[in-house]
Image 1 (cartoon, rainbow, N blue to C red):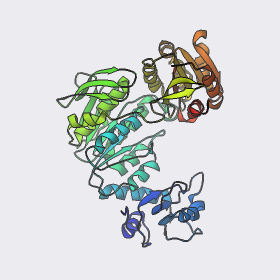
Image 2 (image 1 turned 45 degrees about the vertical axis):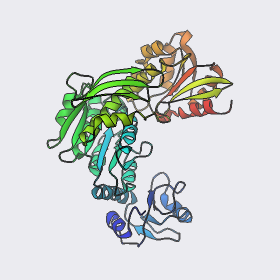
Image 3 (image 1 turned 90 degrees about the horizontal axis):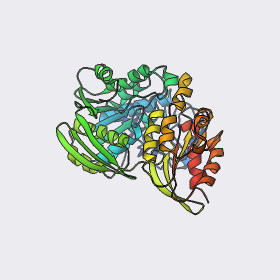
Length: 450
């Protein structure tokens, strides 16, 4: 089935009709599928150098900004990134389905994946791969959206001022969620108030009559509510008495959470396939958005029961380490102080010794040391042994009682073998740190050959 006809594709990107039809859109020749449009982006690597490879793999055409060798039809534009963004906007304009956008300091991807699970049970659903939440990922996700899509979910991220507004304008969501306001990226944003204002800009793109989904328990609730433009509805979620989507209770065991709450007057209860109160709160935000776009929240709650965390974001699985069965909580994709605290509470629910493996939280600027040291009490309360890597986590490690200290290393790659050699039967290991701390290296070492 075609995704873009030649004439509408050319019109969307601002080029002459090259007379070809595409079934997909790709920015990476390594993963390109036959029939895709290859977009030659200019970044650290120039996509124009891979146009010939793209055609060799079956690309239907290429979007380029200069002449390139290769045998295949091309659409010529002045700027391929700008053209991709125009294509994303055109995809949104032609789609009549409901779109939900998610941002927040913590919980964006998990909430997006919960919504993907729920909405797929109601109709044809399109959602971003991985995070795909920046100036490239959002238009790419939209450009790949079939016109017959009934529901779509996008994640909008930022680490600098002014990044969310163009993304939400392009996405034009029917409902927009802010999960949390925390100190993530504060080194780049300057203050938590600046983070709040940047996150709140997601509401500027919401369609008239759409809904802003606001965290009621946030100290910035009133500010966020005031920053939502007139002409859209507001719906709050949280534990507070007056939250429209209110969490009553969240009782967790090792692998799940029994949730009770109410959404706009309708009582709900369900079992979520992930432990932790933070997971239950993400679910309440997702259900609030479902109500906002007109779905039955009882049915939505039933469908969310199939959700399980994804790799790097809380996935729990059993690995074999030197003949020992070990439970791995893979939170390696990213971290903030708030998300580490939540993950440590989940670690404490697990069997065996509780091993925390922590990498630096990045982009905290002058507040980096204080943010890392603020974790000390939670680490001591919930972890039996602690392994760390990175300069700032090293400073935290140095403050811990000696009987809690596992080992510290400069990098994740050096830390992994130290963790692996220390594990016993039925231990549970939490691995967490910012993406740039490369904690995935620890996971790979633990999952590797014994």
